[in-house]
Image (tube, rainbow, N blue to C red; front, side):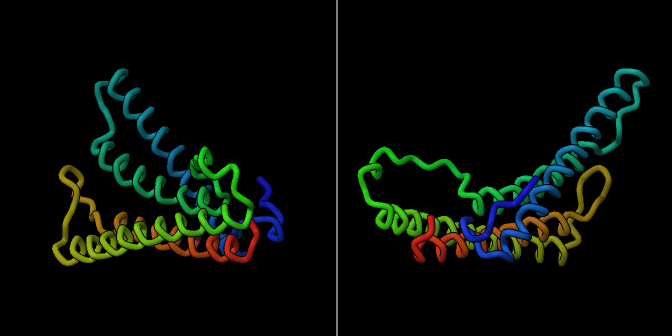
Length: 167
């Protein structure tokens, strides 16, 4: 995988270098989840012995994986955009409109990050665990909060690039 040239990319260099490896981490988690499910199903089928609590690992790893992909997608401007009504606009106007929607996205995800941070704090303070394996849930929630905060920073980076006239 090669990262695009920072002169033509939509984010500052620091975010460029950070979002790719974070997304790869999410991919590794997804592969790990797939392997875990495969082993659990095979164990259940062949030996009537599934992996205990596999669903708890799957639930937490999938959440972290999804949040790991979002900054990469934003940094590469890979979110779905419908330009049906903006195709006639000049590039500057489209950049300003895209910057507005990136700001709305950043604001919403900042609220999500705040909620996740509060949830992680509460889960830590109460000692909340999973049902079967009694795993602490706060680390997964806290990691999702950090990844969500990275998404907000990435949105701010794309806004700066769009306002600067670079789409």
